Length: 137
Image (cartoon, one colour):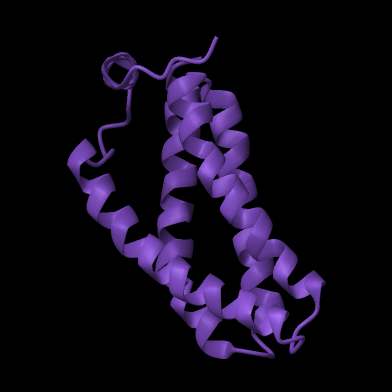
């Protein structure tokens, strides 16, 4: 059964062993707020290009998959409380982001460049999640 109690989710996450370099919990909100703004602007533009038939669906696909994987992380990590699935998911976020950045570059270079902060954060998050998964095996 999925756990949707925020208090239980928070206490579970707080009980996990984390590396000494893990940022405090309050950092995640502002960082993701900024990143979701970049994601919204760039992904909306890519969707607009696809709608106008200026790019094919295959160019749009990694963006769609990326947002799906991105949105799955929270339920996997906090509701299912499954570090391994959360790690697999963040790896998929990373891979689809790289794919998206590569395929859109010939059509809208700025979309690739605006994804760099997202790529850096996801890279960090992937290492952090791998560490948490390892430390709590």
